[in-house]
Length: 80
Image 1 (cartoon, rainbow, N blue to C red):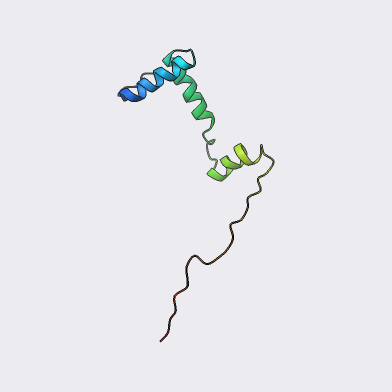
Image 2 (image 1 turned 90 degrees about the vertical axis):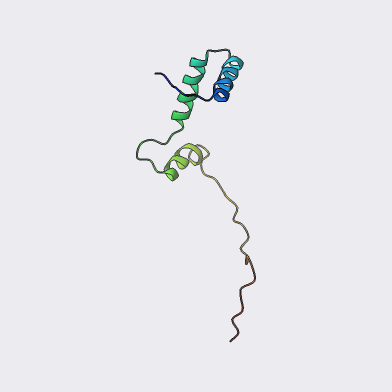
C-alpha cells in the first residue's frame, strides 16, 4: 500500500511518534491503523450499539445524574 500527498507536518508527527515507540514509521502507521479500525463500529452496528458494546457493557452499566429541570428563560407574556 502506498499513501501519497501526506502533509509534511503529519509525516513529521508520525516520524516523531515512531521514534518515541522505537519502531519504523511503517510499523507505527500499521499500529495506528490497527487501533483505529479496532475501535470502528462493526458493519451494521448503530452508534448506540457501538457505545453500548464498548463502554457501557464492560462497565456493567453507567449511572448518569440528571440535570436539574428549570426554566431556561422567563416565558413570554401574551397580554392582549
